[in-house]
Image (cartoon, rainbow, N blue to C red; front, side):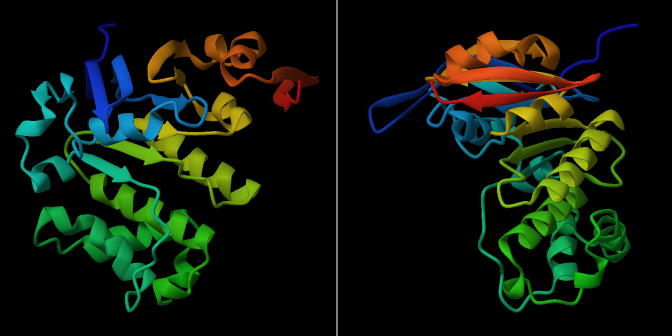
Length: 260
C-alpha cells in the first residue's frame, strides 16, 4: 500500500518574535487519517507552530505547504474550505444563538442551503442540540468550547476532499467526560480520513487518543513518532523536568506526573 501524501507540512520553519527565537528548524507533517498531538512544556512554541501551520503567521525561513501548495498562496476563503482552525478563544458572541454560531462554520462556502442541516447534525453529535437556541453569551466556558469545536468541524464537513483540522488546546475548559467526548470525536474524524492536529497538555489524553505525537521543547522538535514510542516515562520526565511514572491496572495504563 502506498503511503498517503501529507495534507499539511511545515518544512524547516523558524520564527522570531521581538528578537526572541520561538521556533528553530521545525519540520512536521499532518497525515490524512491520523490524529497528531503536539505536546511540550509551557513556552515550547506549540501555539506559535499552529499559527504558522494555519497560515495566520509567516515563518522567517522555511515554508508551510497545504495540499502540495504553499499555504500563503491561498485566498482566505479558499484556505478556510480546506483547513479549519479552533483557537484558544473564550469570547462568546452576544446576540448569536448556538445554532447560528455553528452555521458560521459554513461561511467560507458562500451560499450553502445545507448549512442548517449540517449544524444540526454536529450539535446532536456533540450533545448540544438542547442549547441550539441559547444566546452564546450565556454559555459557560466549557459549553462554548464544545460549540466552537462543532463550528470548526462544520467548516470541513461535506467536502469532496478530506480536510485539515487544527485544534489549539481544545479541551482546556472541559470536565473529564466532555474531554473524552470531544477528543473521541476528533479521532473519529481523523480515522474517517481527515488530517487532525491538536495541541494538548494532558499526557493521559494524549496517550489515549493520539496516533502520533510531536514533542516540542524550547522551540525545537525533540521527538516525533507513534504515540507508544513517544509517551514513555523516561522521555517525558526529561522534557517536563518532573518525574513521570506509568501506573497499570490490568491491561490499562496511565501516566502520572509527580514532584521531584
